[in-house]
Length: 609
Image 1 (cartoon, one colour):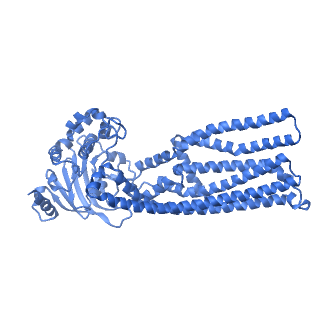
Image 2 (cartoon, rainbow, N blue to C red):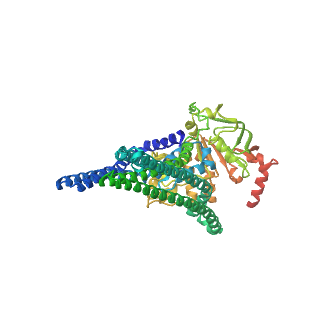
Image 3 (cartoon, rainbow, N blue to C red):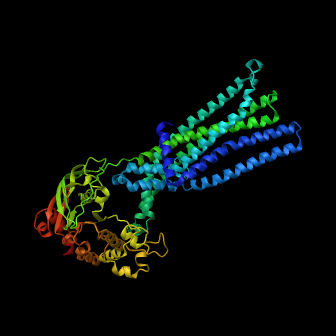
């Protein structure tokens, strides 16, 4: 590992401690020290006890020694068990802790990263880690546990077996009695251990390659599984016979994933075989060495047990230490992904100008020569757009699919920053405003809006602090007055049954009205509605349009729709095509002109004749 790897690993552990896991890390270190030392103390005491038996020591003296050994083992085991219980109990929850850290980053990072495939692949690799069920964070702590334990064990072993080699004579007295034999033994064991480390690193690289290839198929499979698991999509799957198609596609992706998993299992089998072979070979060498020295009368019977067992324990600890060091090196790939993810720089300019507080809510918006490309794309979605409007207008954005309508809204809400040009509010580039204050300008209903399994009032208010009067008014203005009266808990009724058996399952149209109510509740100067009536029946849609002015009041309403008939109430209609504004005017004006609007209008109007 290099300095960067260690730095990132310590950064991950530090992040973990910031979420209240400091005690878990401390318990892990204490457990490692106790587990590393305890076997050698026990071996020393047992070796001493055997020597006492062989030397004809008194009965009472041997009882005291046995009780001492038993007491030490019992007390240390009890402390170790308490610490281990705390540590293992939290280790099982490390995956959730890791997920929480990633999710918190997702809430604060630039929106564009959430639509970046490379970021999705990175999160998948972080999520899986180097095998196991604890996630990357749990695996890292587990590997550090064995590294610390191994280091303590090796240090304790050196202290215990030092007298064995301190008594070695010169080479002339005989090879097996010399320090050269001891040096050669450790050289062979060291060489085997280093070879094991190198091979373990290679095995880890092979596992990484399998994981990296699997991440692409896993993202696709997750999408398919989400479709199959969503009860809201089951009607379409049944009516249009898509279930079989998606199942077949999912089966193909699953088979590819299983292929990578089988390859990974093969690598792990080879890794285990090498590990067991090294352990067996090292143990054999140690017992041969200790047996010969005992035969030559260099050590006592008790010392044979103590030294031989200690060397075997140390050899095992060295192999485990090197193996886990290799695992840590391989963990670094995932941890570096985590660090890279957490350090994704904010590409948005961080403005600090406070938004002007105006009693009249008068805001002017100007798009000046705005062009935009999505990150990683060479194609302009918006090209040299010049557009302005003021507060209080009812504005509709229409156009064919892919014409740039939704991208226009993303730029206005500053989910993305423009590639070229600038957007100004009241004459100031929006990048110079404090971002959180700027977001307060907008109440939006997007096509993919989300309702959460919280009480209805919290869904509308967007938090636990609910102004019940405002929430009721917003729901009534959105057309949910009668439905609200039928709910047993009114605003306290849970949306869905995920968190409460008394929750209510609402229809798609009702959820869409809730999303509209949420935008009304926010009381922002701009209300943006991206296909806000797509899930409503014709009567409800008519009610929404009829009460549109009542809903949005004196705010600017920006309305995106494919149904041109629903845009007639807007004073200002803007027609997008290929990322540019090709027409602008009222419905009557645009209908009288040759152009895209009349073409779209006539194409739709013939179905109403």
